[in-house]
Length: 93
Image (cartoon, rainbow, N blue to C red; front, side):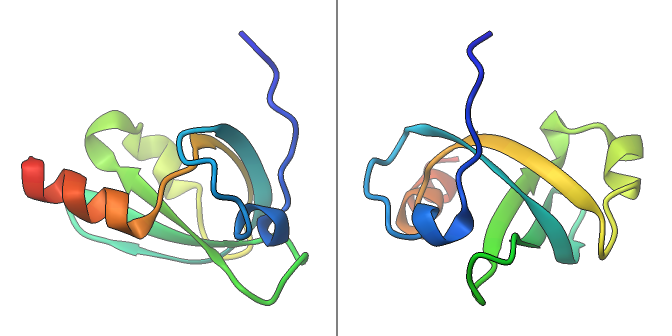
């Protein structure tokens, strides 16, 4: 498996290469959600802005999710996607 270096949130918010793999690390500001999806607001201190992490509960261990609370430190490897992409995907499903 290829190692993905850390990407700061301030740099990620400027990127335009949709689909590129990144690894963001930071502290959980909030977590909220429903039975199908959770949203995690992640901040790494590089900017005042949070990054929204979308967690599909069908593909995530419920016991692990219980450990992700406010203040938890997490690492999230994921492809870069935009809100527009997620909305289009939700309409297709």
